[in-house]
Each structure stands twice: as C-alpha cells, then as structure tokens.
Image 1 (cartoon, rainbow, N blue to C red):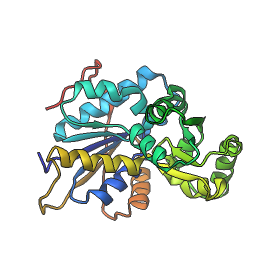
Image 2 (image 1 turned 30 degrees about the horizontal axis):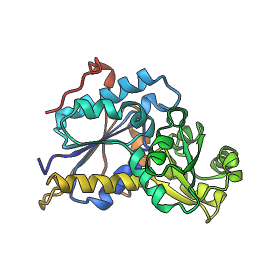
Image 3 (image 1 turned 135 degrees about the horizontal axis):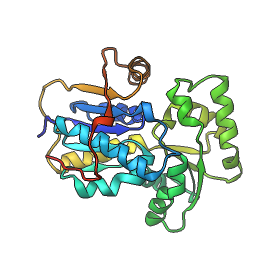
Image 4 (image 1 turned 180 degrees about the vertical axis):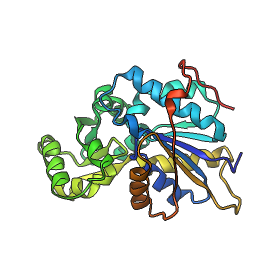
Length: 277
C-alpha cells in the first residue's frame, strides 16, 4: 500500500501545479495523473457532465490501485468531491478547503478575493468554506473564464496574457482585498502576471501548495507514506494532444523524461457508482 501511487485528476494541465507540489513535498511518492484536455475547460459545463467526466477519470485510475485521490480541479471539487468521498474507500482530497484555510491564516483585513471558473464561483464553494472558518470574512468571487484556455494553449506570458489578466481582474482592484485565492489549478501559471497587476499588498494563495501539505498529513496519519528507497514513477495520461501536454508538463515540472500517453475515456462505463479496491 505504501508504494501505491497517488492518483491526480484534472480537466487539463492545471493540475500539474498540484503535481509539482507533491513532487516537492513528497519526493518518494509515485503519481498517476489524468488531464482531460480534450474536454477542457469544465468551468462552463453542466454539473451533471462534470460529475460524469470526473467519475470516468476516477474509474480509469482504479487499475493502478491508487492509495489516495486528489481532485486537482476546483470545478470538479465543487461538483463531485462529496460524491466520491462516499463511494471510495481511500482518502479523497479536493482543492477548495486547503486553499480556504491558508487564506484565513494569511488575511488581516478579512477581505478575500477568489478567482475561478464560472461553476466554481457560482457554487460559492469557497465562500462557504471561508465563512465556515471565519464568519466575518468578506468574500469577493470573480469568474475568469478566459484564463483556462490561455493556459491550455501555453500562452501564460506575453502581451496577450497580460491584457487578459488586467481586463479580467479589474473589478477586484476596487475591493481592497489583501488576499487572493487562485481558485483554479490552472491559474498559478499566470501568477507572475496576477501579482504584477494586483501589487505586493495582496497575498496570493495557491490551492495546489496547500493541498499537497494536506496530502502529506493524511498519508502520515494513515501510515501510508512511501518510506522505501524505490525511485518513484510518474505517469501522465491525456485525452488530448500528447505533444502539447508533454511540452507544458516538461516546462512546468522541470522534468526531462516524461511518460505521457493518450487515453479515451468515452469507453469507461459510468452510472454514478464508483468502487475502489
């Protein structure tokens, strides 16, 4: 069980920000990752469709006997986390609550901004999580639907990205926030531009970093941390273009030899029932 991999699923390449943190914080752990790039973005899709896609990825991972599942997509977390926790016998982590806890620790004004997809912001998942920790927190949610396509196309720097960030975040400039949650795992790739636009007075919280910390705590508590000297394996699967995924993964993770394979999830049978070994 200790040597079994951690399964990570996302709508595309955004979850690689979580992978990067897992590798940094838990260097002995093997990882199996699925990026559903062919059907990305999830942010404007119906909840029923998001649920179906998330379960398809989860069922595909069953063959690897994963010891933990991380839903590295805020949209999928908001829609499917509770369902999967009921159905699986392994720990299932989302990316909403870890980010919320870090934001509450960091804010001094209790004025927190959250940016994410339309579904994530519309679900008020972060607002609920933040106010369950600190009721007095004022939360400003802002959907940034143009960010995910920008990152998926590899354009997270340059004039187009700068202009998109400025136009999208303009409403937050007037809210006097001191903390901003990147409520989508794609967004850390735009963090330098976001930081430049909002200024040093705004603390930026990456849910990926906090999720990796929580994964470490849970694996330690359940005595599932890999304490062997066996070199970890990283396997990546995408429903989209392998070469594009590999290029982004190599750049973001700073890994030379990356095993990326193409998969088709349409053959996975889903009736909203998920089992785990």
